[in-house]
Structure formats: C-alpha cells, structure tokens
Length: 474
Image 1: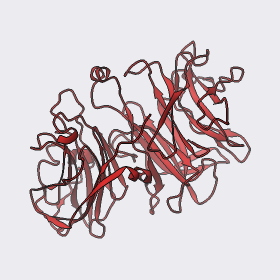
Image 2: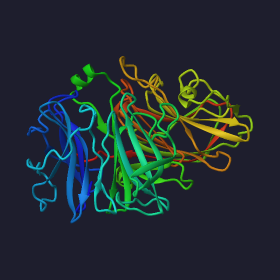
Image 3: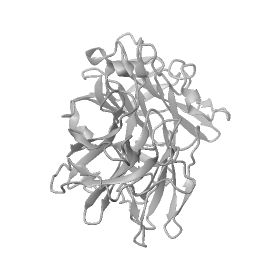
Image 4: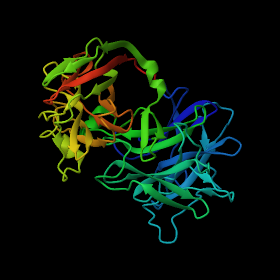
C-alpha cells in the first residue's frame, strides 16, 4: 500500500528458517518502490485468534485516511479466522507498530459449513453504495477483485463504481502455483461478478505471467494514479538446498498494470522507477541477423542488466504452418522444438546468463507460425540449459503473444538480476519470469547474446542495454 507518500510492503516470512512455518508479517518501506528499509515484524502470533500463524491478507485505507490490515490468523484449534490490525501511532511515518484489538477480533469465523482449514487470504475491502464493506475470502485459492480503467493506463481506486471501468478477478490456484484472471463486470446491486473474457484453466486461461509468478497482489498507487502488481517468485532449487542457502523466495520487480486498447487482456510493464538503476548504456546498430547468428552484447554487466530489443521480420511468407493441435505454447518452446532446433521464422531472441562457450544459457525467444490468413507468435523462456547444476527445476515456459508481426515490430524487454530473469514481450502483452542458478555464468563470467536459429533472416531495428546498479535494501 501507499500511505502519506511512503510505500509499505508486507510479506509472509518465517524468521526461523528457509521453509514454510512460523509465519509472521514482515514489513519494509520505500519512497520509490526500488530502495527499501526493513522494519520489525508488523504482525506476529500473540493472541488466541492467531497463535498458530499470521497468514496472508490485505490492506485497506478506511475513510479518514486510516490504514487497516485484514489477515488470516490460525487459532488454538487450527481454524482459519479473519482478523484485523491497525497502526499504533498514525504520526509515525513508517507505521512501525501495529495493534490487534483483542475485544474486536476475530471479525469473521468459518460458519455454516465452511471448511475451517480453507477460509483464508482476505482481499482489500471495498465500500458499496449501501455503506457496507465487502471483502473476498479464498478457499483452496487466493482471490482478488479490483477495478481497471477502460480509458488509458491510469489506475482506479478499489471502491470506484463507474461505467468507464471493468473489473478483474484474479485467482492464485494452489497446486499449480499460477495466477489466472478474468475480465468482467461487478454488479454492486447484486454483489455479483460476471466474467466476460478469460477463464481459469490450467492450459489456456489468461495469466499475469507464464513463468514463476505466484500469490500476486495489486494496489492503487494514489500518488501516481496507477495500479501496481507485485508477486512472489519461488525457487528452482529444492528444500534441502534452500535450507543450506538460508533463504527461499523473493519479490519480483513491481509492475504497472492496465487494460489494453482492445479490452481483452491486461498489459504490464516494470515500474518507471527501475530505470533509476540504469548505468553504462550500450546500443547496437540496426542490423540483420542471419541464420545461426549469435551476437554478443558486450560492455555491460550481463549478470545484472536491463535490455530492450525490437525485431523486424521481412520474410514471413514461408513461416511454418501451425498445426491445429498445437494449442499448448509450452510444447512449441520445449528443448526438442525450442531454441536448439531452428524453424523458419525463429527461434530468435536473447541468450542471457550465458557462459562463454554457451554450456549454460537461458534463452528468451520468439517463434512465428502461419495460421490461415494470420500469423501466430509464441514467446518462450527455455531454462533447460540454464545450469550445469543438478536437482534444479529447469522447466521451459511459453505463451502466445497477441501481435501482428506484419504491421508491428516484435519487442522484448528482459531484466536480469543474477538468478531472476523477467521478460516482457509485445510491449507488455506477455510476461514470463524464470528462476535460474548457473554454475559458470555468474557475476563477471556471465555473457549476453542476441541470436537467430531460424532459416529466415530477422532484423534488429533497435537494441539498448544497461548495466543495473544495486538497489539499497537496509
């Protein structure tokens, strides 16, 4: 949330180890979403209604600019209850202390046949025209309902009711570790949401991100009139390795979220503030990438970088025909069909966190197919050769990008931060996040390349890259 010009990040944290358990609410603050100061835990188990854990929840700004936390507490009977906490001192700019009114908690309990072990994760509340507050509670999934503007990229406050907004219902599906969403309309007189676009489906539902991106939250940034999306990025290493490292899980880069011009999907882009970390800009001239080309982008710190590239595709007529059975883009990105084997138009894109001799590499690339009178673009993130290490999740991710390569350039932006690779295709239409742990391509031994394994030439119309400075986290 943002309160009096200061951003607050609350997060689920185990202070006793790099495994699940002993959950408290960690707390950090920032003035720019990039540099952060950690504070003491905001909420921790202390009362009968949360003695076995302070689980996930949300913040709400009440009338009078009073922030409140809604959260799930695990009580003495291991039931999931909904509780609230408020700042002890509103004059403290960092809101470092929070109190849980004992005589008013819990405010919601599992009744009328609700499973007490599946009643959790309250959303930001919104106020109806009748003056009553509403909130969604998840069961096996985490849910989130928010407003999004039909006009431009500006954000919308959660309680706004207007014909110029649409509504987004997001679900974090347990068992898949994926976040799905639908776009529709919430009818306040009936307290009913009707989806119009998208559906929750393990293979073809709309997702914020098609890689490691889970348990996301959004909030309305009233200072800059935008909606911010943030999510947890899990590990690719196993629990034993995590224990040895001493930590597990990380927050991704905050993203600005808005509705695209067609109203059919959400767009997202790293917050503008991340560009304050850019240094040592490198530009490549416009040039053609022939079949088999691998061109190094040198002069920057490849293990911590921000890169933007646009491709033009002059020869699309001979693109491969898309088989009607190819409905799962991940299969089109797999190692057997992905960046190793060349097609006609693609694969082309980036090799990041690559070792000098390419024994290790994470490939982010496009492939283009012909489907009757249109072209289909697939964006891939191939982790199969990301590390020589064993016991790592090296899943390859893929997603379709709704773009017309005849009339539009194919753009790709990739942010690299040692083990994190966040990529945005089509100016933010599709996002894929990867978690990789190379053994060779680390720090100064990491390299960055642009490549083309397709038989048709592609043109780099623009490529700019920057080394990224380290954010200040205290």
